[in-house]
Structures are given as C-alpha cells and as structure tokens.
Amino acid sequence: MSGSNGRTDTHTYQSLSEDGPFGPVEQPKRSTGRLVMHSMAMFGREFCYAVEAAYVTPVLLSLGLPKSLYSMVWLLSPTLGFLLQPVVGSVSDHCRARWGRRRPYILTLGIMMLLGMALYLNGDAVVSALVADPRTKLVWAVTITMIGVVLFDFSADFIDGPIKAYLFDVCSHQDKEKGLHYHALFTGFGGTLGYLLGAIDWVHLELGRLLGSEYQVMFFFSGLVFTLCFITHLCSIPEAPLRDGAQDPPSWQVPQGSSLSADGMQEYGSIEKVKHSDAETELITQGRANKKVPEQRQRAMSMKSLLRALVNMPSHYRCLCISHLIGWTAFLSNMLFFTDFMGQIVYHGDPYSSHNSTEFLIYERGVEVGCWGLCINSLFSSLYSYFQKALVSYIGLKGLYFMGYLLFGLGTGFIGLFPNVYSTLVLCSMFGVMSSTLYTVPFNLIAEYHREEEKEKQQGAPGVPDNSGRGKGVDCAALTCMVQLAQILVGGGLGFLVNMAGSVIVVVMTASAVALIGCCFVALFVRYVD
Image (tube, rainbow, N blue to C red; front, top):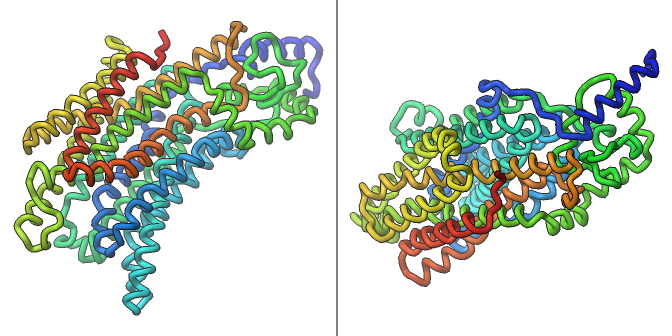
C-alpha cells in the first residue's frame, strides 16, 4: 500500500489473521427478499420440469419414436451428468470470472435449458415447415427432438449443484438454512403451476389457435417464466470474484490454524471469505509473487486430483451421498411411472388398445387424474417446506430425514396394496414430503459439515482430514450426482422389473421397499452434527 506506515501494516496483518482469508468469516445477513430472489431459479427450473413431464412423452409418441430409442433418451442425459457434474463443480470452485464463480455456469446451463426446450417442443413444427419428404422429415424431427430432450434434462439436472454452491458461498449458516427452505418452497410452487398449465386444453382456446398448437403455447409460457426467474436469480446476491491472493497467499503469511493446507492449496469454503480492503490489495499483490499459484490451481482442477478428492471423501460425506441415492431411487421409481400406474392399475385402462376404444379412453382419464396427483405432490411439497422450519427445532435434521423416507415408504406401500382413486390422490401428499426432504435436508447437512470443519480448522484441532482440492462446489456436485445415478438405475432396472412382473404395480412396491430401506440407512449411518 502506498503511503502506509509501519504501524498501519502491523495492524493490517493482525486483522487478516483474525478474521480475514485465513479463517471462517461470517457472511452478512441476507434479507428475506434477497433469499426469495435467489430461490426463483428453483421456481423456473421446476416449472419447466413439470412441462417436460407433461409433454415429452406425447411429443415422442406423436413422432413415432422407436421403442429401442426410449432407453437411450432417458439414460444418456443422467449418464453425462453423472460423469461431468463433479468436474464442473471443481472447475467452478476455481473459476476466476469477474462475475463470480457460480453465476457464469448457471447462466450457461440456463441458456442450454432454453435451447433444449425450444428443440423438443418446436422441433417437429420447424422440420415440417422446412422439409417436404416424409421419411427425411421423420428422421430429422426425431433427431432434433431427442437432442432437445437430452440437452434439457442434462442442463436441468446439472444446474442444481451450482445454484446450491452459489447459496452456500454468499450466505451465513442461518441464511443457508432459510435459503434451502425457500428453494424447496418455490420448487413446489413452480411444479404446481407447471402441472396446472399443462392440464389446460390449449388447443380449443384462442391462444392455442394463435400460436399454432399447445406445444408452442407451453414453450411461450416456459420460456417467459424461466427467463424472468433466472434474471431475478442472477441479480439476487452479489458474488465476489476469486482472486490469486485469496486462493494462494504466501506461506509465511499463513498463521496457525488457518484454512489453507500446508502446500498452499485452497480448502473448504475459504476461497470466498476475503474482505475487500486495502489490506487485501497488498496481500493479493504479494501473493502474485508466488510462482506456484498457476501450477497449484491447475493441479487442483485436474481430473486426477478431483478423483483422488472424491475417493478420499470423508466417510460421513460418503454415507450422505448413499442415503441421497437411495432416496432419489425410491422417489424417481414412483414419479416416472405414476401416471401410467394410475391409468393401468387404478383405472384399469389399457394403453395398448386402439385409440378409439373404451379401454384406451379410460387409460387416458387415469393419466389425467395422475397429473392432478403430481400437482398435489408439488403443492404439498411447498406447504411442508414452510412447516419444516418449525419442525426442525423439535425433531432435528435426523427426525426430518427419517420422517420423509418413512412417510413416503408407507404412502407408496398403501397405494400399491390398495389402489383406489381417492386414497391414492390423498397419499400423493406423501410424495411432497419426500420431495421437500430431498431438496433440503441433505444440503443442510452439507452446510453443517462445512461449518464444523471450518471451526475445527480455525481452532487448530488435530486430526482434521486434509480435503485440499475440494470445495463447496465439488461437495454439492457429488451430492447432485446421486440424482443422475438414481435416474440411471431406475431407467435401466425398472423396465426389466415391469417386464418380469407383467404389471406396473411392481414399480410402486419397489419405491416403497427402497424408501423403507432408506429409513434404516439415514437412522443408522448418516452423521448428524449436534
């Protein structure tokens, strides 16, 4: 610093060692409005998910997609996400863009989601307008629609990790908990609105006739809602960019019990905790003199070090990932086949009958009622997310986690054993409990683990594991990867089970059994911070 005297310098380094980049710095309190703005991304994402759930299957069926390609459509996206999610999480931990570490990735994935929706909802119409030959038109329409579905699914699944890491970076521990509850609340609202709009018969309304078809109407609403929600999200809370000095200060400036490892590489959650001051400017200037900075940053982002960090993940993180995998496997097993279950088992319809037969019309009626059941699921997810804040003070995170799995397991079990229209719709509320649980509790536990480790590092506690090379982005990505792995397991395994059993009732019973196994796992193996 030019014009600084010795006494000022001494005071500067003392303040840095106490609450600067070497120890956990509590983020400022965020207003409720800012947290709500941050949660709008989840509203827009879930709205578009609901539209996909309502329209992708009709779109693919209307194109005449061969059954041999169905598994590829649903397995390609989660496979790519499972392989690439931790890589992007690690890269975002070390991103040095001026706009911040997470928001550039959120913006990119959001644009990819919009492009995917445009392709799968409008691909057939665009190809029909440009190509005259029926055979060529079919090939191009199927290809473009499949690309759109895979691109949308990939981006929508992928974007959850950066959004959660963005929340963790810019909020205090209390605000993280509030933010996660708002995320779950607006996730339910977005799904509810998406299912409601999808249930409207737009073909016979003026807007449907104006835009051409119900697919174009839903793209109009989806694109508008998604764009507004993501602009609001990206402008919600400022994100400080990562700088050289914040990542790798000279080793002689690192005090005892710092959050930096011995070799100067960044560890848990410390890269964003830098106060903007003249002292920081001097620290950054001196830190750039260290020639190992680029080399260490490159090593931190390499695939080899990333895999090593994931393999050496502390056991309690690994158990949390396994419990998340079990929960999402149970949840997706039920949700992906629920409307088909309503049509075939509850309403006794036949999807393979001719389209003008009574059996097929009954099946379609069951599918429509199943969509209303999914709407109940989304609405109850929002309501339960609101009451979670009160429940956690009485039963804790362990009680919330256990109760979510238990209620879902019992609810799906009763639906499978007693398939009745009204009881099934009532028990759809248990799906909302599970949905809210999966969106909040595991990430709350991640935040608890991070806070505990930061305190131990600050106090210089012996035996704290070395987790260099991993940050909040990697941890959130590892947890989100379990969703993609669950999709792979469900997509690859449930079809085989249905063919073996000859009935989709096996899907609901499988979901119940897996959820009840998850109850035992979250009670016995998941670690909870006191």
